Length: 109
Image (cartoon, rainbow, N blue to C red; front, side):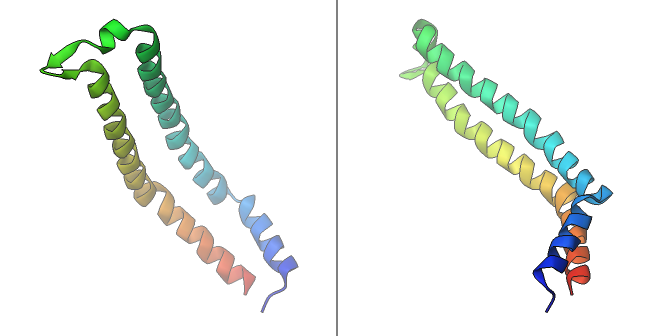
């Protein structure tokens, strides 16, 4: 079994590698824009609910109004972003993370 110091040194080497920087960059390129987009979309819902009650209370069909549609679209957008992230992670992040994990396990032995 390897010593904790060896594992730490191995981790530090991998942390400074181009692959690790690339992994972080790929993650951030996806996560940051989508987080900002979702936050803006959510804040639009909150702002309209507080300061545009007439608009949010507008009936679309029967008793279904704009506020209900916006609220339901919050769930839809959440699941859509989760699905997009899953696709992104499977294609862009997981193969690189697996390579880094393999290099760590090999070096830490």
